[in-house]
Amino acid sequence: MSMLPLAQEGRLRSLADFYLTTIRTAIQQQFQYRAATYMYLVGMVAEPVIYLVVWSTIADQSGGTVGGLTAGEFAAYYIVWTLVRTMNIVFTPYGWEERIREGELSGQLLRPLHPIHYDLAWFAGGKVPWVLFYLPIAVVLTLVFNPTFDVRPLEIAVFAIAVWGAYLIRSFYQSALGLITFWTTRVGALFQLYITLELLLSGRLVPLTLMPEWVQTVAWFLPFRWTFYFPIQTLVGDLSNEQLLGGLAMQVLWTLIGIGLFSLVWRHAIRRYTAVGN
Amino acid sequence: MDSAVHVADLRKIFDVPEREAGLKSATKSLVRRKTKEVRAVDGISFDIAPGEIVGFLGPNGAGKTTTLKMLSGLLYVSSGDAHVLGYVPSKRERDFLRRIALVMGNRNQLQWDLPALDSFELNRSIYRIPREDFLRNRDELIELLEVGDLVRKPVRQLSLGERMKVEIVGSLLHQPQVLFLDEPTIGLDVTMQKRIRTFVAEYRQRHGATVMLTSHYMADVEALCERVVVIHHGRILFDGKLGALSNTFAAWKTITAAMENGSSDLSSYGEVIHRDGDLVTLRVPKAETARVTARLLAEQEVLDLNVEDPPIEDVIELVFAQENRT
Image (cartoon, rainbow over the protein chains, first blue to last red):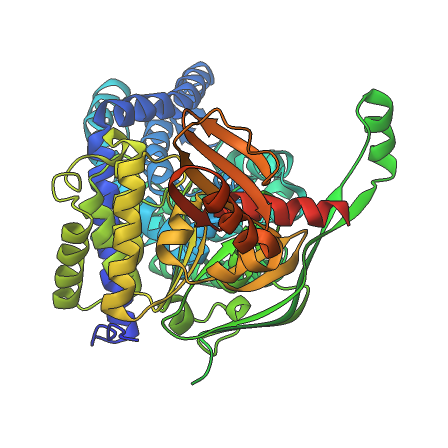
């Protein structure tokens, strides 16, 4: 029986080749549906604009600030929020639920590469058109809401890394949650709980400094704040160099914990796979 | 030489939730859930030699697809032994997955909105195929399946048959040594079925691949497989040469005679199962075939005569009918 040889490059280079190829394919796919992508993005911008209008109005009526934040700082927070949100979109538990329930996972399990690599690469590729499409929206929001920005080069560099850290953390925790479908086939309720916690404890709903003290304390012990609040604060807040680098270290820690959790659940979950459908 | 596929006393048992229809029983199942044990595969054993092509036959729910899924590593076995090319499939080692392919007639693995060429490129990177080998292999498969003008169209614009051919190209780019084909011609027209059959035979010949094929179309099996394994209710009923299947299970043969006078009464020779003008088909017990043929030729004005084993579809039907009665 004849067999093709393996490509000569090492495993890491092959993996890089896979990521680049998948990212390219995902970009092509997104461009194929540019109108739909734009509509999706415009819909997504609605969430921060609502927060922004509400908090700017309250700030104006409260003598210019709320919890020490001015209307301009709120504007900066939510404009960066949208960029972070665009960057931390991941394959959701609903995606896993459908993939498992419909048996689509079979095709992916037949490949000599873990499906998580495909998800990470595919959603990384999807971000390129999303961010490109968001830039004109960001310009409009800037002109309308006059944000206050005072950014150092190191902050920009840390932000560029932190948005990917946020992406990895959300990817692994949401994928681990999605794997619960192997036991229940309906993971929606748990995902709702996750999103509620994320809204409150990540800085997604409001800047964490506006939350009660005890909520802020709890947030320190959970991964959520590193997926919204920290990347946003790198550009908007006044973080010291130690806080910036310490934040990245925390992202690494929570990513490693996420990988461990995902791997653990995967090992048990995959034995339960019954390859329903096809 | 070692077997390419070795299966010994293989079992797969599913616990399937079960309840009566209606609100009462739905409420009850909230508290206490009843499950039923389903033995999808129940102690099967067989070996397939390298380069052999075997037809895996059985009615819906017989356990064919479950077996293929266990052999390709998608399902864990409940008990027993399964080895493919010396690997334990459920471990899903990378080297194992690079050597096999499972092609299912109703599955789509290509990117729906993009031309298939993009998905092929993705498969190149997943299977770590050296670029030169990839291009050679891809172009060879495209030529064999005559899909040159299809691979540049978005997959969603292809017909079912076109998509199946393109799907096969994508599944074989890494040149698998063992091919599990689950209903590869399902829903396709006769021409397309024939094209895919020819392709499978050519692929096997070129690469010495081992092929295990399930199909409801007996034409697929007759064209490709010398050996068949018949499975029903998760158990093997027959494993041997296709020709021997009718010897084992069909106790009769058919005699088709072109008569000078088609209206003659031939019921004394055997059961008349078909009459089309002067052409009469009789079913006779196998042991009496020679005697009945001689009598027919001596006593009737026969222009032409043909003695055949029953069609394979009829034999298979007979096998399952016998099994259902036991």
